[in-house]
Image (tube, rainbow, N blue to C red):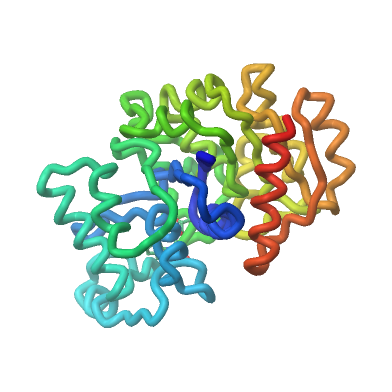
Length: 316
Ligand code: FO1
């Protein structure tokens, strides 16, 4: 079975652990957000690709939620001493190895979609990672008085500055990365991970041609709510949803993605049992919803959520 997953960073990586665990023989492809990426102190940072790679490789720092396990910060200390880079944005020593390797390949002329397998092949991830696009499309956040890269809004301000809008800078000239449209067209099941609907899933769907490819696939498309009982499971999705006028609820996010029968992308939607009241309004929008436990707390629950999503898809 071919499963294609649209995913951002932390929520996406935990969900992918579940998909891999539940379907070890499946051909799993993750289409990963690149909107958080940026050039920083001379290297290319790709947070969502790296978080997913480290997590599937078992190398992720589970307490911090990003970066490498067993990390050290000697180089970061030197950068701070020189006043180079952002003091609020820590680049670990091991993590820098990834950024330097990626930058080396990019500078040699390879597109990101060819760089990713050169990094992930070091481990047996069991999942093929594809960037949504090879173009440098970066998410910038408009706040009172100016605009900043998403990374500054998140890591420096913890999303505390009210976001007026999100801009996917350069998106109009971007195209899906090689393999992305095929991964959607040839899938048996397409899943939207419980990632940030605005700056992760939204940034992926904003790539010209990508949402159309989701709408065109013969595979059923099922999303997993990143909101449980009116609260984000992690990260800053509530601040992002508010900025685009979508309320922080399991049904509002489904309606935001829209039913595929109404120019949206969803056929099915998983909500937590705490949100079973969302099933009816989502169904009336043309999306088949199911209420199941959604907390991705351990291997068993992650695998169960993945099974619930695939089984809903196959039942559609
Ligand atoms: N997140 C933080 O909250 N503080 C950091 O200093 C930080 C550094 C960092 C370095 C590399 C990287 O790939 C990710 C990093 N992150 C950091 C996490 C990052 O902001 C998030 O993973 C996503 O961009 C938002 O989901």
